[in-house]
Image (cartoon, rainbow, N blue to C red; front, side, top):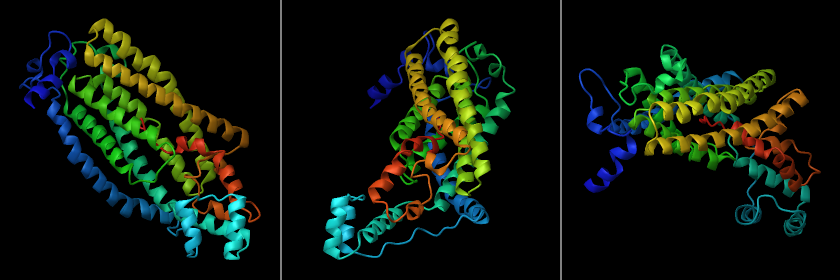
Amino acid sequence: MAGILAWFWNERFWLPHNVTWADLKNTEEATYPQAEDLYLAFPVAFCLLMVRLIFERFVAKPCAIALNIQANGPQIARPNAILEKVFTAITKHPDEKRLEGLSKQLDWEVRNIQRWFRQRRNQEKPSILTKFCESMWRFSFCLYLFTYGVRFLKKTPWLWNTRHCWYNYPYQPLTAEFHYYYLMQLSFYWSMMISQFTDIKRKDFGITFLHHIIAVFLISISYVNNMTRIGSLILCLHESADALLEASKMANYAKLQKMCDVGFLIFAIVFTTTRLVIFPLWLLNSTLFESWEIVGPFPSWWVFNLLLFIVQGINCFWSYFVIKVACKAVSKGKVSRDDRSDIESSSEEEEEEPSGKSSHASTATNGTSGTNGYLLSGSCALDD
């Protein structure tokens, strides 16, 4: 085990040439990031999960009720062993041939069987109240992290000139504000990775989980090798749009259409500007060229920049859907429900379908906008 740890914490990988771990030990004059600090993120992440449960129950839920968001679930489908077996073992969206066979077997009208499958599908969808509480938690914490980051970054020289991120690197003391900010960011991403398995499952589950993993690695690497200055800028920039997204979703759940429209369009502008323009031209330029010129490359530097390029690829992927929905919103005059994933729309939406349509048609209608669910899954993504 000692040999594995020595190999993993090899100074030649983590630190620039001629710099050792001993050089970055804490002294009375200066405090530097220590690798063991990363372990603090696990108990803090657990505490965040507990705080979230309390927040959603005693803050978010009363707010939702005050906005007339009801906790009532969808209409329950009446028990039927044959239809339940088809639903669980064969298909949730039976075609016309199967519907006709079930109609003869049960002596039911086809439209009654269609209605049963719609009600049964809706039973598996989360309530609007649950979705509102999730969004309000993310909105509140993302807004807190962003405002906290802006508050202390505006006093730093590297916000205005990113070359200061690399001057005298890695001998840059870690302040208490930096330590707290990094710890909360890392803990929040760990909590998001855990809660993603219990939260409402979104259509972009895989890409969001990948983003969270990369974010944890980036935060950890930049902390261990003391790239906290450029790391804090990257974190704060990516937090700038997350609260706007969650606010738009909350307005959608509360049926505040105008507020949802305005909030979403502002989010789309901020998201695409920060992640497609500012991030590559300002921060990637600094991590690639300014750091190369002032410090020079070393192994963890390559890994750090590789992960940043993957993040930028995810940014482009999400931006495509953001722009797509924004263009539809402008052309239609509103961000309509059809422009959202069926996961993000009302849990009773299928009940509104005319009974004459087949369930297959219902699936196709919702499927036309299904890919746009990437947009409203939140991620805080980059994370969110």
